[in-house]
Length: 320
Image (cartoon, rainbow, N blue to C red):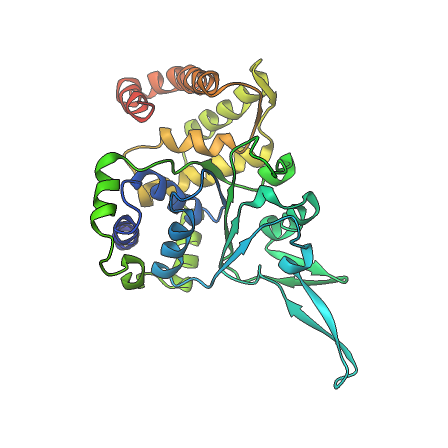
C-alpha cells in the first residue's frame, strides 16, 4: 500500500505542474478513477478540462479519446457501426470512440438525449451492444464528461439515469490569482503537458483498483454513509433522494481515500453526493443542506468513537 501511495502522489504532482492550483479537484478525480468511477465536470469554457483529461491519460498511459458533443453527433459515432464490405461479402464492425481507456465527453449536454443515452450501458456495464452483438470495452474504462452550466443556450439537460452513472460531480472554476499569474508567465515556454512522464501503466492502475476493493471498512462507517444517503431522501429541499447506486458510489470513494488523501474525507462526500440526488435549491441552500446533513449524521456516531472534535475541525476546514 505504501508504494502505491507514493506512486499516486507522484502522479498528482505531475498533473499539478500542468493544472495549477487545483490540487483538491485532481485528488478527487484520482479517487474516482481508483474507485473505478466516472467524473462529471460542470464548468465554463477555458479552465483546463481537456488538458486535465490529457494529463491523466499521459501520466497513467491510458488510451485517450475525445468526443466533442454537438447536436449532430450520432449514437453510432460512440458505439460503432457495421459497414458492408463488398470484397468480403459481409458486414464488418467498425468500433466507435468509446473503445478506449479514458473518454473525454466534451460538452455532453449539447447533444441529443438519444446520443447521451448511448453511454448508459457502457458506463455501467463496461460493454456495448450493436446490432444484437455485445462487445466489451477495455478493462480500465473511465469517462470524464463536461457539461455547460445549466440554462446555457443550446443545451439538453442530462437525464437522472445518466447523472446516476457518474461517481462524482465537481467544478474546476477559475484559478486563483497566483496560479493564473504563474500560467501567464509560462506562456512561450516548453509545453508542460508534452513532458509529463508515464508513471503508471494500465495494468498497474487495474491492480490498484482491485486493491481499493479490498480496503476494510468498519461497521460504523457503513452506517454513517447510509445515513448520509437516507438524509437526501427525507429532506424537504430534495426532489429525489440518492439511489442505492449513490450508496455504492460513497462506499467505493471512501475506500479510495486512504490511497490519495487520508487526512480529509468530508469534502469528497459533497461531490460524490451531488451526482446522486435531484435537487431544486439555490447553491447557498444546497451548501446549508450538505452542512446540516453531515453534522447531524456524523455527530452521534463520532461521539461514540471519540473523534467528534477532530472531525468537526476537518469538516469546517473543508467547507471553508
